[in-house]
Length: 324
Image (cartoon, rainbow, N blue to C red; front, side, top):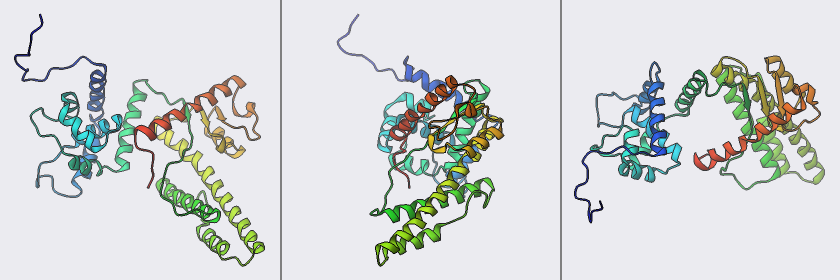
């Protein structure tokens, strides 16, 4: 039977049978289970309040709504304008975000104001709970891990060789300082050459002749090489510590980019209990020293190559195209 027009639109929303709707329903179940016995919502609520009393002021989004809206925005790669439209237009998205069908949906400015209040530490806590749940349910055991580096767009001044070298030393020293403060290992990994690099960059710019400039350049290159070495040495230890915090054990197999290939890094991994450690480039290392067989080495190198697609997805879909 086919009618000319639809006589009456149903008042109540009807659930849809679609793969995306089923995916959202499963994600909703996982989010509900995560908050049982966890303080995630309390952490989010404190950041949303920003020190203010919860019983005063205008009624805003709940901590649970903000968490689910954040997941939806990141999953779909939406702008705030698009997010506001989809929440107003889609009953499925409103149901996932726990927004009542008769309630007004938040505007773009309200969405931005609420989501920007969440710190990186809170998002990290959410990710850690997800990883623990994946471990408990046998989805991801963390036996084999891979790592890689990438670059993102940022605002820089007009580059010159000396200024880029100085900037590299300055930024690496700052990141090492932050890492040491986070792990409680102050002064463990480095000597801060920031002031010396700045002086050499100024001396290069104001050198009276080429001979003087070459002398300063050589010293700046030496400083940069040492600082890069500090950064490479500092990344392997916290990398394993973070994995132990998440899974309670060191990984069985580790595969990393060729830039980390060195005998010192291999020794660190082996002493920590890693059975097989493969680097994308050997750089003088022998396969039997890294892994148990050439076949396993090839498998680990191929496994590491798959991280490139993950990084690409993070950049295109999750806004990792720029850094501040």
